[in-house]
Image (cartoon, rainbow, N blue to C red; front, side, top):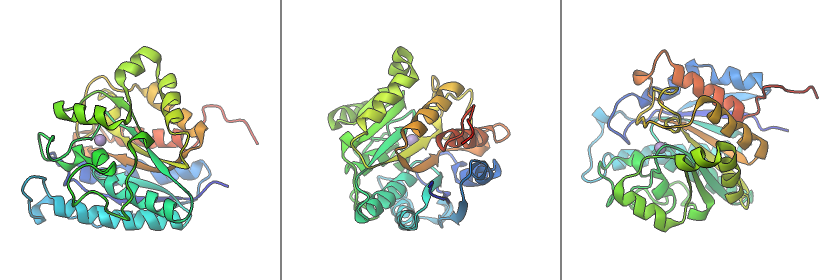
Length: 305
Ligand SMILES: [Mn+2]
């Protein structure tokens, strides 16, 4: 039987410069995420939001911006994430900027590990690798660092929080990459993460790329899908924190989700970096809800029984 879905908002915008992604959870709820999942036959529990301070009320740390506050929010998110897993829910986390994944992945992976459910990997759908460390980051913004942190690289206050689980580089696949900082490129290449850029998508087709990425992760017991809306082309998803031209088209994005659904490997989900202030009539959040529907089993033709 399919697990009931738990929804948890983490309205954090401390990991980046532009305001607006803190409104992401409201925008996705306004686009009727719960109803879309209930239509697919899931029981849905909305568990509200993780308490998150606004930048005006927290102290700026030297070096990495707001590192203490980001850490606190991620610790809280990790606790809630672990509770969702041990309560038998399929967790859907609504960001917020991508630094929430430091907490969400740590929480779900630690709980899966502790319960004997085994090893969890990551499918990272993103225009960026988010693989900066404090040494390589041009901005000091944490949302450019979560994947490095989750593999054990980065600021000691952020590595190993929420149960201490890190992920091995070979248990991670990035799809849709098209923008890297110079030194981040070197560290990503050295790390041994499975990487599929938009060049591979263009050359081989998105179906072939997704199948390869799923094969890279096939040894794992579970996969955390971290879905940064900026993997989509800004023409179809203008309401994101850091848009980059040349992303997935509407049909490519649905096909990614449909193929991932067929593989039945995903055990938890982040939906991050939606910025309603930069959006047009909430279209990016509505698209996110559509794509989550495809990930969770909506079919163009569904046969009875
Ligand atoms: Mn990202």
